[in-house]
Image (cartoon, rainbow, N blue to C red):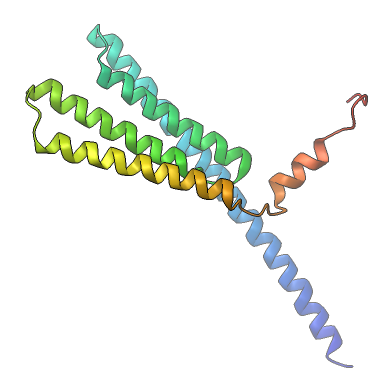
Length: 163
């Protein structure tokens, strides 16, 4: 009887602390996403400017730009869905290893065991991508009713209704 006010106060305090914690975590996520996106864009622009300064473009350079593109796509997908697209990380790794292998072969002109090992790593990553795709289609993740999902539902309007 006398402790009901204490329990009510505890529940309100818990709710406010949880709301504040969620706000801080989401603010950090957005800040980090903008920082990562900005750094990726800056690095891509610097790489592109370096190519212009050189006066020519190599396959190495193009693959580097693809890595930046994939990183930017990852940031965009995470921003929209709050889910980390693990397949994009695998694509980045495959592109990076391909870039490494092309660079090694173009500079040394003699393929060796290193290229065979890198090729095996690329094959392993391709198989991992296949496994991830199969697992995500066979066992889809449950959708949480988070803030991003609520925001989408709130902004949807029935067809024929003007803004």
